[in-house]
Image (cartoon, rainbow, N blue to C red; front, side, top):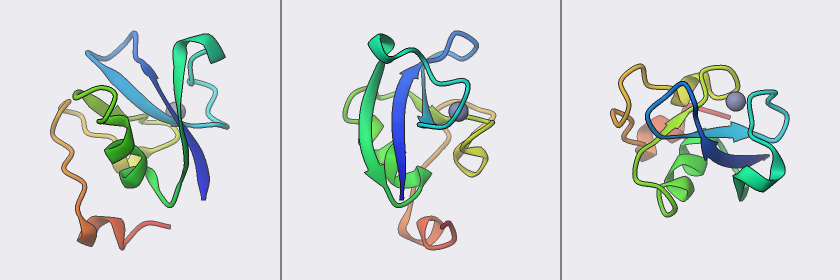
Length: 83
Ligand SMILES: [Zn+2]
């Protein structure tokens, strides 16, 4: 289980999910805590309750990072393959 946050991405066109340890995560005042999740797919599902356009960080959540924003569709089969 890792702790995840969602914050606005200056390089992207929306919001990105990061782990607590990622150096790209926004300062405390500019991020929303998502709590502990089993994997980045679950974290993205939670983040979408706050922002519809969410991507995974390319650095800390590469398996949830879509080059094309909005292309991620977390599913049970995908989630089963990650830690
Ligand atoms: Zn990150």
